Image (cartoon, rainbow, N blue to C red; front, side, top):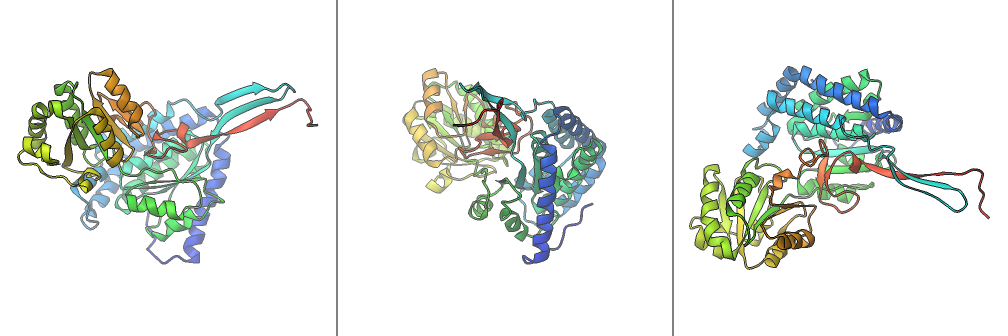
Length: 429
């Protein structure tokens, strides 16, 4: 089991330790950039097999993390995100295997042309290089991120939450075993083995070695990273997701989608946090959805119109409508029109995932065009904003940015491009 270094003040030793990790990652990235697609795929399939073979050790490591969960003050939803069982470990392995089966984005020709002077201009997809990834206490994210980065030819430095330290360390050990056995640079996947928060600041200053940082966690962490990072940041702010039930909605469909979006798994970023209902169907829909949510212990807070129709609903404030609950609570509002729903989402949403339930294609198209969000769902649960569900394989996160990637980030989103210009001796006059 990996041993965590004790916390210490920022020191030359800590800085040197972090720089050594980043230097090894840079060397690995340069080597990995030229690795054949088949070799990367084989290494990832071997990593999936190794995770399956090591399931007992991985679950033992996870038990150590679960035993410490109370000391960290984790909520029930956070413990659920941390928990591993045989089924979830198989899911982790399957995710790594799925990434291995994806087309290799590296080397893809994006554009090609020939200039009048005969120069061949080719724009091709290439890896970003070194990714510094800071993330929350979800062990599956460790394997997903490592797999996606490797498949796209990048080295990754993983800084997971201390709550999942043992689980993450054991998963990384399995993956590194497979990577090394298949002739790839083992340091293309490294886990930061210190709990010292100052290590994050040390890495954020290393723009000479690290090409991009991806923070995936609470808003406080992300804002700190944005303030301190000297390299580009790919951000995922809060997941304040909406379901809007239009006047032309199939109400049985709307009920099923709302329950799934809220209750299938509450502690994740693509769970719905706010429900909007058109006034024309509010009286028919709200009492029914309140009854459907009750067995899951969902607390409902709403505006004045909602509270007339759901008698035990609490008062929703502006703060409620802007909150990502990640638990058994939902804000509800009755709106007078489609445009009012769009305005509400654009005011309170976090540009993550927003869904409209309607049989009116014109309404669906208007919602999709005017809501400022990374992913619009039409007659589908917000829970489908996920790399695996959308065909990207595992994901490294869901970006709420607009540059350089937006929405679920898979292998293609961890690449950039370069131009290769080939001539036959041309000189410029």
